[in-house]
Image (cartoon, rainbow, N blue to C red; front, side):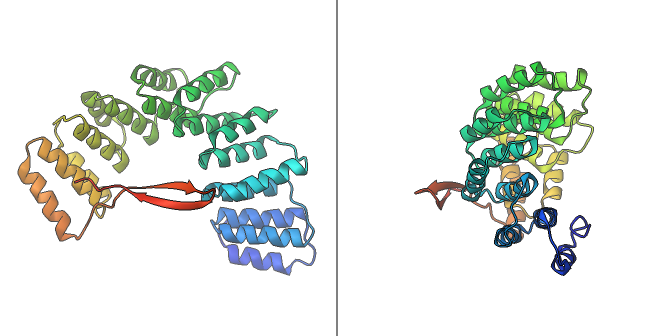
Length: 318
């Protein structure tokens, strides 16, 4: 109860006052730490659990895998997987889904797919995580094939499933397929598009150079676009050299949503220049300097020698 209300200190106090603890007690405490994002404490608790000679069950391992996923810690995740295999723990839906999500989020998509294939039973969440994982790891065509297979299995896709398949279409540049799935989501499954669905469509159309169509999506949205959608659209305008108006509404909204992000001023100034609005571009750069803002260079992570990590900084644009 305390953990559910994020009062993890009181939860730990109650745990310490217990004279007898069973597997449920330990698992609840570990799950509480994970829910409160105290991930290192969750692993410490697991070590104490092993010292107390209490064996974890599927529920415990699901919580630990969730912590690995948030930390993107593949080494601990693989250790947990080894424990599952050695102790012949059955991959039920919850445990299998947690395991394939961990591998997928850490970029080990082949291992995620192996786990997915080994699962005797899969629910909608299992399919959705696998589809999204394939899409986000550059396997868009496989994501589309798996989505079709999921529909054929009799499962009805939900909002998250469509977000995954629209993302795959965006990365592959499949405009017709993306529009088909978006229409299918609304018309056949009666799912109301959310921000991520509109974002995928704007990104899909923008990448394909269909700037007018992307702009129409933004104008017809029943909700205010977020900064990600606006940046995606403006980035597409700049990439394709289109001077479709950076109207005051979009520009002001972007700077209102994230007034302290230098990249917003840079992209707004670049598109203003493209539109021939030189005074607006100059004003944006002056405002950026007055605020002392800079465009933070992009960075990428990669594993070196099986564990050490290296940051590669890219040149800032603008």
